[in-house]
Image 1 (cartoon, rainbow, N blue to C red):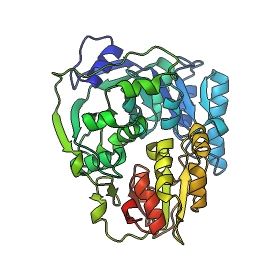
Image 2: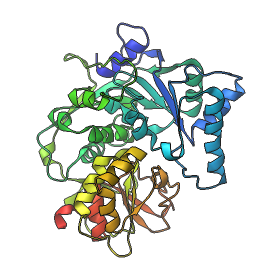
Image 3: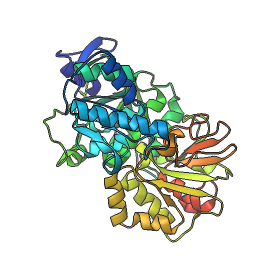
Length: 417
């Protein structure tokens, strides 16, 4: 079996499973945010449920519209606080303790290898980088799991992606996943487990692995999963507060497809509006002026991302008329980046440093675009109106390309600096 099949079999009490099979599975961790959890809370209350299945296996993270941008968002955040108090939810994060959920929860050791994890957010697949079966669900599904500790899945087929060769300068995990989505399309892995393997994956940091798994959903994937290895275990050590069982794909596991890439041929990638599949190598981007650059999000808001941006922008300044917005993903990331001097470097370059929040990624606040404006962002999605006005444009790239573009005033490479 594949790693995805093994995890689902173990959590449904079966020796083996096959693609297409319907299963009821035990869930190790379930979570929602300040947009999706209030709907689940309403469903749960209407059902008359007085207790959740496990107070320590549920997460409530206020991260989308916080710090509260208006009255409605303040009411949503309060719903989470009131529910957490009444039902004794242990893992409720708000204010100075909160951060972008898909960075914060692994950081806290709440998602572990071999887990089944659901989150009422499409980018829950991020956690597959730890070797977990992690996927997004609707708010009513989250409510059902909060009551019962269970959910149901159809076992997905798996596609194995093998990344060979060596990475070129300024190429990161973000470029690998953008290249992959550009190759197979936004529905190329619809309801499938995307398994990322190969020597290049083995060499990636956890930050880059999280980025790749994060964007599996942009190819239609059910999960984006990586076999846990020594890098995974080093990340987990000191974080995990409960037992876990890692799983690994068998050598003779069946895959719907096996796709191999020579990474030595992959340049830094830029996804053009209005789909993540509209990718071009940086050498073919042309002249695209920008009004805004955003560095952050559950895709690229980790310490390694801020360090890369600071390396590129050090000693330089943001182009006149351009806004550079930097959002560390969690308080821990913020502190580390501050202690290492990355934030000072970015501040000196003319960046605006914001609090840990999803903010502009979903067009929420702290970076909304006006009509006709173009932004280059390290986020994961560039649909029409994603970051503001429907007549604005969002381009996606890695933090090195983002930092260089902020200096150039147009999309460009660090090599140009």
